[in-house]
Image (cartoon, rainbow, N blue to C red; front, side, top):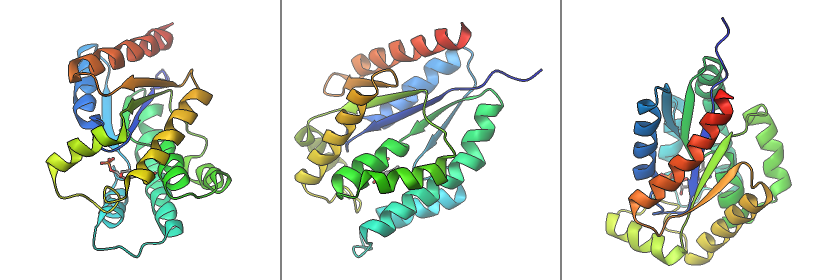
Length: 213
Ligand code: TMP
């Protein structure tokens, strides 16, 4: 018997929006429901992707050009899609991925100012048409996210960007969510963690019912 196709859920948001906490809660929820769910992240999730992550987040590599950064993100993605995502989905597994292509439009397009048409060309090469079934966008005012990342300390290369950069990132995420309301759920990440999780679970339950129906 051919297994039913799995589902791809992605988490997006600015810095300090609480993706990691939410991810753990979502995985626990899916497993409780008997869904075989896999967790991964971008950039990362494969040996190559984790090596790329080390490079793009390394604060000592200040001279990385915006074009090189873009290509690195899509290098990691091309590997993750073929090595992890496609096989898992084909086997009927659900995947929760901490960031995916929307992050490139938000960070390299919005933050760095690169042309989205250029990003779309790389998307076609790297993702082979794979798009998330559901994208949870954790939305938070930039200054609130900053307060949270400051507490953590040790800002990585991208976290060191100024507020204007993160305002542009946020604006692109919100514009993408508005353009694709069926795929996106915008969650108010300034709420307490349990309230954000409740909203996220409601969105996942809709997807689960669709998948069953
Ligand atoms: P994080 O997922 O732990 O927040 O760290 C990943 C960082 O990489 C974050 O600052 C967002 C950034 N990023 C991009 O700039 N473009 C991308 O395509 C992806 C996946 C991440």
